[in-house]
Image 1 (cartoon, rainbow, N blue to C red):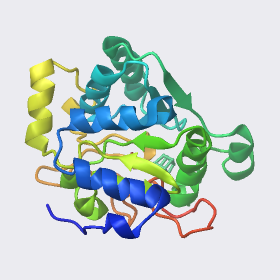
Image 2: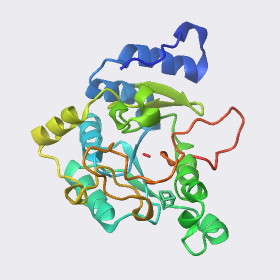
Image 3: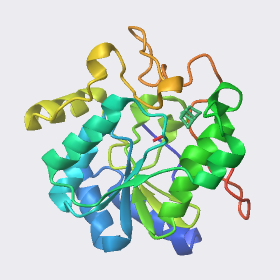
Image 4: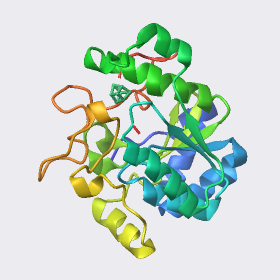
Length: 251
Ligand code: SF4
């Protein structure tokens, strides 16, 4: 799918680097994209994973490049127990040695969500303290990061670049080009275990208060914040230059 082409020669710094890498990698296999990311950033590269319904593919591919890659897992405190079990078993199965559990700051919860019910009245504020801020803090130690987003998820992701710039860092989206069929074929080829909730009708898995099964024929992410305008938790929402992390708003 076509998306805006950027003139790399007109850009400098991290934006120029992202544009050059995107031009080089936009049609590359995910494994080649991951190798280039690791070659470029080494231990300044992190992978952000929800250990959700489709996470096994990217984690398996990355483990081929380096099982020691830093994997950042947002444990919001509102995840399904099945996700926490899956995070442990999948990390062990793939031999990942550096999976980091990112949790909300105690002070943020005490001030803004002392009863753990902010999601009922302010989903953007809840995602901000449970996802955006913990990830911002963790990413301060990295120059590049990898996400599992794909264009077939629809919405804002339809125009997803393979490499992009965000907040001065380089974001790699190695699976941007892959279809659901290609993902399923990779899972079958490598006999990767499914998230336990997939069999219960969840094609995408987030926090339990904000995730429900999708109906037949609906988009993959239809069960996320269903019935609300919200489609992203905020960690992939662009911020204006000089603006602090936004309250508005997967991994
Ligand atoms: S997905 Fe729902 S419960 Fe999870 S952080 Fe966002 S608003 Fe809160």
